Length: 133
Image 1 (spheres, helix red, strand yellow):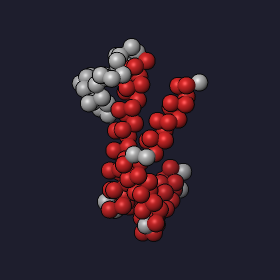
Image 2 (image 1 turned 90 degrees about the vertical axis):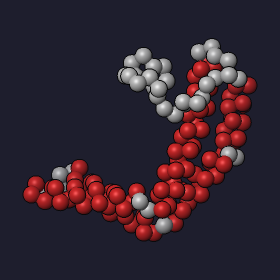
Image 3 (image 1 turned 45 degrees about the vertical axis):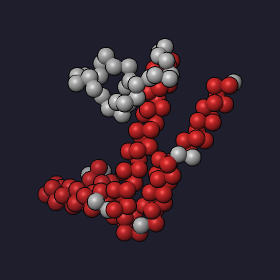
């Protein structure tokens, strides 16, 4: 089927994009950052203990605070910041692609589909009437 072949070609082009390269590099940097990986492991253990109720009731606020502090350190790690930035760029690209596809399926001209707000919502209201989500 020609549409599937074209979609596979699109997939290849996405993998050749700057956004994909940035995301791949950021993932690799995160994986190689031993300090970050240690923090992630520590955070995951704390969250599991909290979720499974393995923390005494009187120590619960302190354990939650510790988990939040670790999460804050993860999110301020330079490699994690770079990863989140790259991930947001990739998500925006995918959102634009998806918007064009959905609008085209709904009869819009693929050449003129407005993707300027593809990553967000401009309705200012609920999502009940929106076909995007």
